[in-house]
Image (cartoon, rainbow, N blue to C red; front, side, top):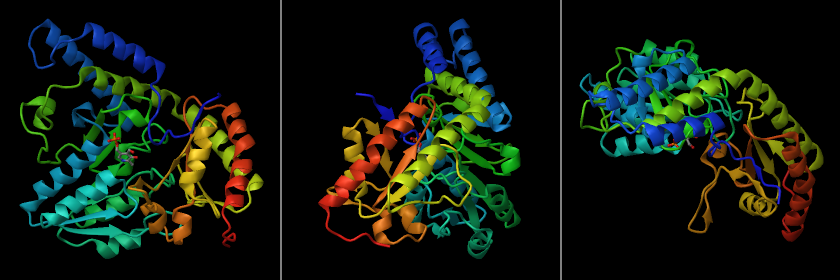
Length: 388
Ligand code: PLP
C-alpha cells in the first residue's frame, strides 16, 4: 500500500544527514562533555558546534541557547523559570493565548494551583491574538506573556513582535513557543523581540526528546532541573550528545532549505486545500484567512466526525490528525477551534493535514483520489442533515 504521511506537525522523519551524523556520534563519541580529557573535549566540541547551528537558525548568540529534553521542557523552563525569577519583584501574573499547546496551557494551570494569577487571551475567528486583547489583560504585576509563533492545529502565525513590545512596555518578559514555526518560517529572535524562544528538534526532521530554549542574554530564569553545572548552570544533567548533534544538523538543514521547502511544500498544501474545497461539498478551511505556516491546512467537513474520517483515511494508508483528543471514548473538541469561536460541531469535524520533507505531488493525488468517496460514504451512514 502507498503510505502517505501528512502529520508532520505531530512529528517528522529524520533528515538523512541527521541520521548519518547521529549514527557516527553514537558509535564513536561516547565521551562525557564535562570530562577534561580528550574524549570529553571531543564531545564538548560537538555540543558547541550544535549550539552554533541552532543559534544561526535563530539569529542568536550561541551562549544564549540551552539544550533541553524537547519543546515541552523548553516551554516549562521558560514559564516556570520566569515565574519563579519574577516572583521576588512581586509579579505573580501570567498571560498566554487560549490556543497555546498543552505544554504552555497546563504549565499555567499548574502554576495557578500554586497561587499565580493566569489570564488566557482570546483569539478572533482567524485564529490570531490581538494587541488590544493583550493591552486589556496586562498589568504591572504581569511576570510573563507567552504567545506561540505558529499554532500546531491550524498553523496561524501570531503577531509576536507587536505583542512582545506591549509586554516589555509593562516590564513583563515575553516567551514564544516557536516549535511549529522553527524550520518552516524565519524565526529571528532579534526581529521577534522576545526574551525566550522554545523549539523542538523532532518537528524539523531532527530526533525526538531534544529541544532548545533561547534565553536573551541578561534574562534570569530559575532552573527547573537542578544538579551539576551543565548548560552554564541552566539545565543540569549529562547532555544527550547524539540527540543534540542531531538537533544541530536538523537546524543547519532547515536553515539551508527553508525558502525552497516553504515554496515546494506550500504549493503542495495549496493544491491539496484548493482541490478538497472544490471536490468535497461542505468543506471550509479553519484559519485560512490568516498568515499561516506553509505546510498546514485544517479543514472542516460538515456532517463528519473527524475521528471516523481519520480512521477511514488511515485504512487507505493516509496519516492525518484531528486537533481533538479522543480520551476514554469521548471526543474532546479542539480547544483551538473552540477558542476561534466555531460552533460545537465544527470543533469536532475538522482534520489537520500537515505536509513536510518527503511529500510529493503523488501524495496529494492519492489523498484527492480517495477523500471525496470516503466523505460521501461516511455521510451516507449518518442521517443528520448538512448544517449550514
Ligand atoms: N509546542 C507546540 C506548539 C507543539 O506543537 C509541540 C508538539 O506537539 C510542543 C510544544 C511539544 O514539543 P515536544 O513534543 O518536543 O515536547
